[in-house]
Image 1 (cartoon, rainbow, N blue to C red):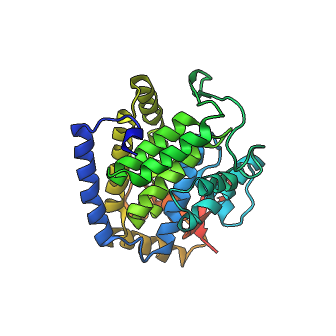
Image 2: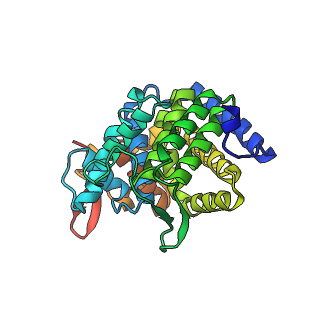
Image 3: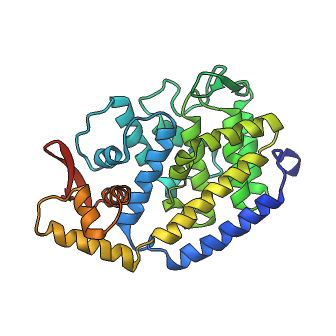
Length: 322
């Protein structure tokens, strides 16, 4: 399989990022609350789904995605709601998927794009051009007649290569986008499979919202793809993805439940035991934080399933989740 290795170069930057990520994985794994906190796992998974779909122009906010997955009624385009439900279903089935199986890759696409495209769970039958948000053509996908063979070869390379999984998963992600094997859904399936591959290296990655960081840095994501396209190898994309993974781990290392976080939640919980709802301004006063930090704390509590947002006159308020 070495002769079929996709083109990329191991740069000093890649070596440095790989070492930093490996060190962070060890640190986060040793102190990880993800192993014992289902609310944190669920919150991170929701962030992953929201981030990956937002890149594809899904309009739902993090709070709305949380509400949809909580079985609540959300006023939003039916297509966007279907995308959320489909994505959640396949992310919840990560443990069932063989990361080196073409059949499982097609199954994942079938679930992810169910009811959204005609060619669901199958390779595309026609040509496709990849465009940016402004409609500019970035590149054309591989001819449909060669797509199955290219995907088989790519998965074989990932399985057989002795490169670290941190690098192989990024190469797979980029090369799948380059082949563009599906009529639609290539990006979200590529990000799902990247997560799947990393989770086989370390189960921690099944619950880390790397997709959320990619969404936050979406312009860099596309710039890395474009630069790799222009250079004819995935080096720049590997560097970007390692940086995004490192950022995700750094956030995880800093946001795992700590005494400070627990103390903050205890203050909010005490307030809500005496009041039906709490507002952003209340959080500012109670915790001595800025409005932006208060909004982040409330959003994280919603994503973790602790709070839900309700209307209180002309403003939003928050109450304990039922």
